[in-house]
Structure formats: structure tokens, C-alpha cells
Length: 456
Image (tube, rainbow, N blue to C red; front, side, top):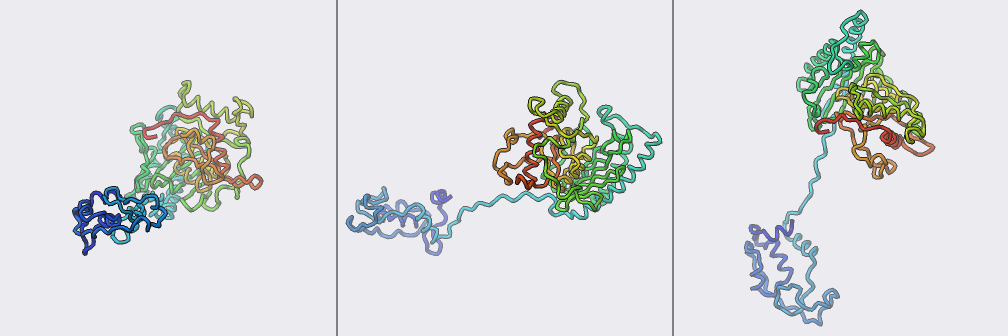
């Protein structure tokens, strides 16, 4: 920046009778003659150079830095007399800056990314989401009673396990009306109102400051049809790509899970999550001793290398005896499938499940659950690592010398969640260190799933 100003400066000639910075520096260099100095001056500066002053004889030089250089330090000078030692580059700059209002180069740090939830009244949004979920829960209970009387079994969407019922549509319409009436400037994304397959790009823009309500009106539709009680309503508020409010209401179970950023996670609004407080440490030999939660999903194509085969391979490896599967057997305590990704996440936040691994989920399936799991103290990341080095736990992170895991992007469709974990007083391992350790142990045993989407 300084060099550029020295060579291109033509307008900062004389201000109040003062010479420009370039000429000041030339003066400091002790140009040999007035004529030579004049020829090297900045043509835009009207200040006159002082006449050249002869230097003392060589014997008078006492500066040890110039004792072996008795010629003029400026190679453009014809004089052979020894002058004072030429200032260093740093000295020149310091002297010039002391007498000139010279603009200094400054580096403006980039503006921090907006914090999710900043500028929003999260207490109000949280209270409204709770109220709407309770009203929607009452509608779901009424629909369940009609179901026992033999009401409609539903309509096929993608295949016989991807279903939608009138209840799904009615509850979503109720929630959407409530939200758009109360918050007309907010965006709304619901499973049933979304045109499935029309656009498989990310549905949530992380750069958007517009709050987005992300709703699954009935997660566990197949369970509802079979009257298996693991069904719920999932409501999330997303801001700058992150869920900041999450509510999961399972009315047939009498369970309401909820959280907001900075407010903790709760069961039925009064019991903090996880259920055991403080939470126990994760098993030292995990995944042994863990409950592993997973789902078969809707992709049932019997194709070698397809998602069905990959999931089956992963489930068997996690369940196999220690030493089995080529030494990768996980020997988990048990494998659980609730038929609802939202409830899988809720019970992971509660500490009932140790590990949740899933692929194929959409934003409305997981947004509320991610908020609840994080606020309970759990950890969520990608189902498989994007960087293979992460499996080995390279150093460079904040806790225990372990590198930080990459943040999961909502909409990535492949997830891995770990329950809240306490510190281990015997080993000194913190809960966060243990969560990362278990994540890497799971990654070693599962097969990557193919649920890609544009931008993913």
C-alpha cells in the first residue's frame, strides 16, 4: 500500500506549505545535489529540496554499521563522500508517518454471521408453538378415535409405506392457518403442502433472516394407520438455517417434548431433559452397551448397493458380537425403530436412546428434534463424515485436543445423534469428548447412504 502511494502520488503536493511524503523520504535519503534531487522529486510537490550538505570525512564516521561502507548509501548519488547511515525501510516509514497525515492500511474483520434467533422474541414464538401443538394434538386424538371406527386408511404417495391421510392434511392446514394469521411475514414449510419431488434442492435457506415454520403434521403416518401410538406432531421455527424453537407432541403417549435456543429442553414443560440428571457417561467401549436407534425408511428397492442393503449391512454390524464382522461388531444392547424420526430424536434427547443414525429424512422430520437434542446437551452431526480424517479424531479441537466435528446442515438428509453425556471422573473424559468418540466409533461401522440432493 505504501509503495503504491509513493509511485502514483500526484495530487498530495503541498498542504499548508508542507512537502509530500515521497519528497520527505527523498530528503531523508540525503540526495547528493539539488539538481539530482529535483529530478527525482514527485512532480506534484512544490516543496524545494534543501541544498546538499557535504558529509564529514571518512575518519569521522563512527557508526559501526557504515564503517565498511564509506561511499554514499544512495547509488544514484555521484558523491563519493561518506554520509550518515541511510535509514532502514522501517525508519523511513516511521519518520515520514510522524510528519504526514498518511493513510494507514487497516484490515476490517469480516462481520460475524448473524446468530440464529437474534432479534426474535423466542419466548413468544415458543409459547405460541406449544399452544398450537396442543390444539393440533387434540385434533390428532379425535382422528385416532375415528380411526378405531374404521375411517380411511390413507392414500399411497411414493409406495405402500409412504402414505398420507386426511388427518395429515387437516392438521397441517390448521397449523398453517394459525401461523400465517399470527405471523403473516413468516415463511411456512409443511410436509403435505410441499410438492414432493418438484424441487429437491435445500428447502431452508441458511442466509435467510425470515423465520420459517417447519412442520410435520403427523410424523409416523404408518403407525397411525396401525394404531401404534408412536405418532407425533413436529413444529420448528428456523432462523438463519438453524432450528431455534422445537416442539414434538405425542398425544397418544401423553408426552410433549420442547425446547428453544438458550432455554433448555423439557418434557411436558416441567421436567428437564435428559431424564437422568446429571446424565451418565457414555460407555467406555461404546457402541457396546448402547441402545441404537434407526429406521428402515421408505427406500425399499432391492438393489445391491442400494440404501436398503446399506442400512441392513450397518444394522447387522452394529448388532454383531465383538470380533464379528471383521472385528467391527458393535454388540449394542439393542436396536430400536419407532417409525418416527422426530420421536427417535426426542428419546435420544431424553437419554433413552444412546445413538440415533438415520438417512432419508426431510427437514420437517428432524428440525424440531435437532433443537431439542442440542438444548438437552446432545450432539448431532452427519451420518457419515465428509472428511475421512475425522474418523480417526485428528487433533485441533477445543476439548481434549480433539478436532471439532463439522456442523450438520439442516437438509443434509443423513444424520447421527448422540444423547447427552456426563463427564467420567475416573478417566477424565468430558461428555463432549465421549460424544465425539462414539460418533467416530459409529462411523467406522456404518455404510454411507445415498440420499444426495443438489447442493448437498
